[in-house]
Length: 130
Image 1: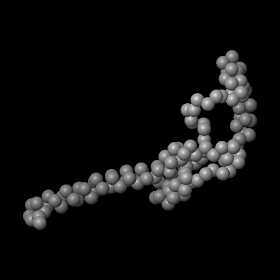
Image 2 (image 1 turned 120 degrees about the vertical axis):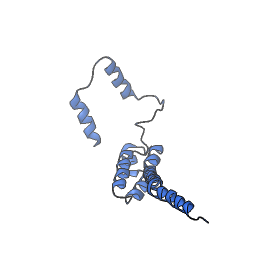
Image 3 (image 1 turned 30 degrees about the vertical axis):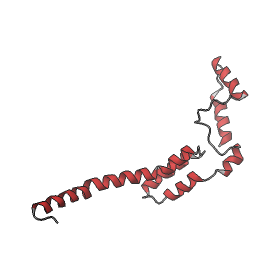
Image 4 (image 1 turned 45 degrees about the horizontal axis):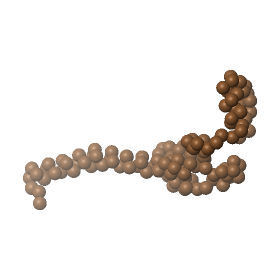
């Protein structure tokens, strides 16, 4: 099929492809596959999205061994979260135009008037959820 100089130039092209282009493509595909659980969890509004992101990063460090766990976790229903908070989705980053609750209206009115709650009260409220 190829003879002489043509065979050498074809071999050079194949070598360049194998040494330069193939590793770049493989690394890119590897990274894209490893962020799929994160994208699934974000799309499904999973309340443990931060932990799934962390597991995806750890999976990159450990060569993909933790990736199946992240994939299963992204598709799982957070039963204990639903028992604790009454919902199995994370609404903290949603842009819904749902009416605000009575407490949030009070807080926003107080902040407009300059009456911010003390920092230690905020810490106590946060510690209640931990």
